[in-house]
Image (cartoon, rainbow, N blue to C red; front, side, top):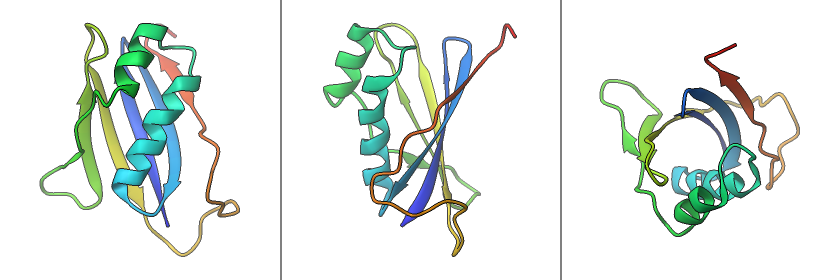
Length: 109
């Protein structure tokens, strides 16, 4: 199991989410499914994303366990970086379906 951190920039805001998964593809799928619960995307954007409107992540050259992919829900570019945190100790109980934690940081604050 790995802890995958998703750092997302979209429409002037940044969100940070974490997903526990056996592999990168599984983490991406869980993260994409979690977008159905967020308030900062409208129904059209959620419908587009959930209809497999995304590509596989691409490893970033020169660093380990860091990937990038993007989405273009409707008109705006959503940039997503994924970081795999490996380690023996994870500071919370390991469960198969870890809740998704989201922090939204607006540039206007």
